[in-house]
Length: 577
Image (cartoon, rainbow, N blue to C red):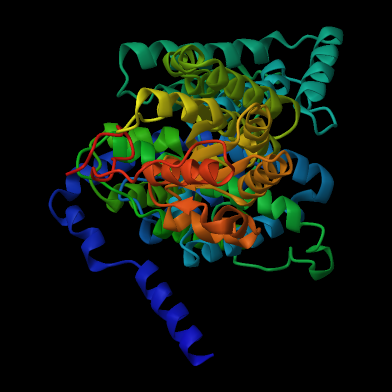
């Protein structure tokens, strides 16, 4: 017990912040402060918009950006990561709000944070590398579609209809708009989205999102446009930490949503950190520390009324592009947003919802990397299929199911590709020093097969069918030196094939069984069968000599004088001196 606690304590110490984390910040703090200011300007409308889209309100988005952004910056494993509310998380939260209400979302966030800390302690961060790129691209495309559809009610100036499925909600909003059109809201949303998209192409470094939102707010207030519904009142500060949302009796029903939120937070945060590494030289994130930082951020954010958070790819990319070199930039971003919460809440509350919808519509469009999608579609049919299935599942079901479906299909297709590498090929007998007459007799009664590649469950039954077709021979030689791996299914199928050949009076000789494969063969009784009567050999020439001796005992071949030459090599049959 004591040793286990000592190991856990040591593991926690490994995950805590280090003095070296801030070495880079002391070199050029001005650069990081300016980068943090830029990211805060970009993050403000996104935090407001994602808070509204989640169903908990703009104040929840701001609280998340401040609390989670600061904690993840200090405790996370990336020097450049910027965390906060994201569109992907919003997609997952909407059905949770519908089923359990705002308190359910806060409880789910807290539970997910604990799970992320546990994953960090278990060193689970390294498994991110096993998520295939088509799955990532597919759910990114699906998320972009869902985020865009979620903004339709606000962009149309319609109250959000009831429902969990984004397609159903969007259709109902369109029906309401057809009855009573609100062209003012559409104009605001289209103008903001247009300014962001065009401006990003002309001047990528200018924060057109905040400029467009400010302009829309000024126009709406100056013209007194009632159709441009504002966000509403925001609290002038963060609420005091509270656990009042916790209902211990309902935690069981929230476990599955919490697992989904934790899985998404881990996946998106590690993906974002990897993207940041790829955009820089010399930066390398620690995946376990990143999970630990995101876990602490998600434990704290609900205490202040915030929604679950993740690393944000868009804001992290802005952070890198504007010259950030350390955690100080992400921490500055959170501090500036905190100042806005305390000092400018009345002004922020007047922003039209349609303007925020325009921001998120533009964000959704910019999430779609056409070049990456085209490359994946052209790579292989399997990659294209995985991408499309993941995107469609994200739109029709939800993100977690989409990722599971994408991983499952990718796994099946990968197994299919690996299984195709397994081959059972008949190979010619090495002539060695046999005479032409003797070689003819050997070829008439002995057949040699070489097994190449993995012999596992996906390829084993095809192997059995091929081997069962052997006919009109007395001895089969199985050359196993090129078997790369074998599992229990492959070993059982091999045993079954050998037993069937024995029942037909065909002797089986084996050569080249690797030490690492003997345990699997022995566990199912195949090794004993293959070694029976001394018919397992180290090399193929020795196995052929054994086959010849077997034929001599059966009276099929006349006994010949022992060969005077040296042993033969396994692959060529040439004499080794």
